Length: 304
Image (cartoon, rainbow, N blue to C red; front, side, top):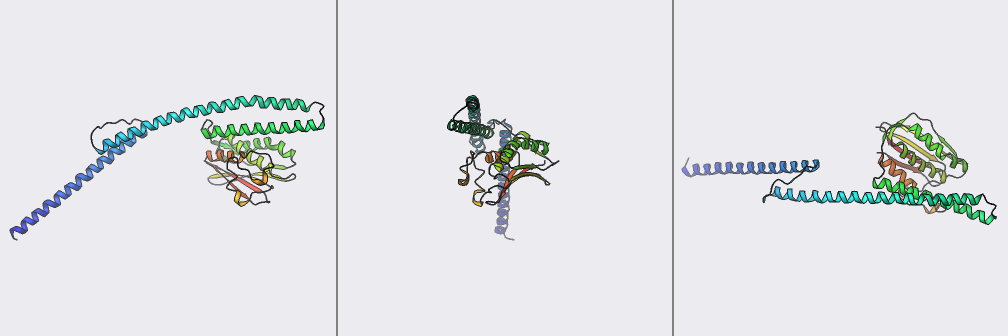
């Protein structure tokens, strides 16, 4: 082998070694940088992050930016908490300030109704009572919705039997069903699910109230429970006017009211509030309906 060939082989060997060393140290540097970033993120998640390096390296720049971001996030969190406190105070004030005047209006209209009034005045008193009741319902619904949205009131799902909640809803809705000559029945059940009894009763009452509202006199509303492996299904079925296909996605929107029911009572909050409650418990609501053929609102509550 000639001397030139030996030199070429030596140069090649040195080149390979140098390249290997470059790759090794580059990967080592990259690994150390990634490990450093991993520690930074762990510290940020744990809430114990502090800047430790002050040099011209990329890691130092990342530390500085992360520190600035966390500081800004902390300020935003404090501002958000302050805004929630203001909203909570405002909602409490609205609830308190409106409760007494509305109660007084209803009291005075009741007293007026006991007087020997002319027929036209009695009609005015009846209309005034209805409007005051509607106003009270609207304010109560808005307060409940605002408290849920802002986190002032939180849902507390827990394992519980469904029978007690369904019985409470049936007892609460019975007067409306009797007044409209609608047969309201609740199927017996021994099933259990994970839910907040108070708020779930609110959601189911809204669904039952909606069913009675849009079911003609002489119709029927039934509540039945069906167990599945992961969920428990509660069906609220009516023989009412039904929902058209293009409105099924809209009826759960806040304040939405179909043009076909504008003459009926309601504010477009009940179904929206029901969905918010059930969703907050880890469940969901589904509707099956055809225009003119009644509706079934199905509530799915988790079993575990």
